[in-house]
Length: 264
Image (cartoon, rainbow, N blue to C red):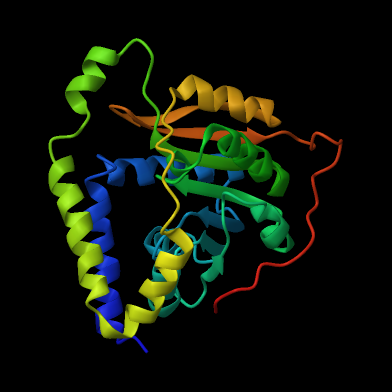
């Protein structure tokens, strides 16, 4: 059992660590939420955060949109445990692997109005990123919104980007990331989960696939999205918004089936 104060401390420090890897994260989140409200004509009713870590962003979306049904997905058992123990009780915490057929597991929760993936897709190789866009399109309602935030350099700005990235604080952030995980390893109640984490993720090498934003836009359009483009940028980091067509590629809304077991 994890003490709530311990859980809250680790979850609060997650934002501090991630800020070094996503410069301007506050502005990014504000832009994402503003776009989501514009596309949905107000509060998105059903939301799923993909690669949601310990659930801090899902919790902020639930706070902004108290009437929404908010869920999050991750594969890391340690992060999922922190989310399940610390996030708002209204948030569904789910385990799924974005490298696999993850919609087979979660489709019973769809269709969704909003899908988000923040600093997640660069872990996937190109063919899995394309599959990710197809899968996301399949579980969005017609007219729903996907927002992908990641390293997406802008062609023609190589000189500017080189001066902005790596960001000045990234080396510090990398050390903070290492210290964060070292602290978790020293937490006795988490040791079984850390061992499970090693068994699941120990042999997985991040793809570090960071193509230009044009690649992501083309992949989204090829997957059946109606339109796709950048709604926020800071140096090499960008937020790509893609809206689902009025109908699926098969002429329907892509109604899913099946259930994702919730951790709580």
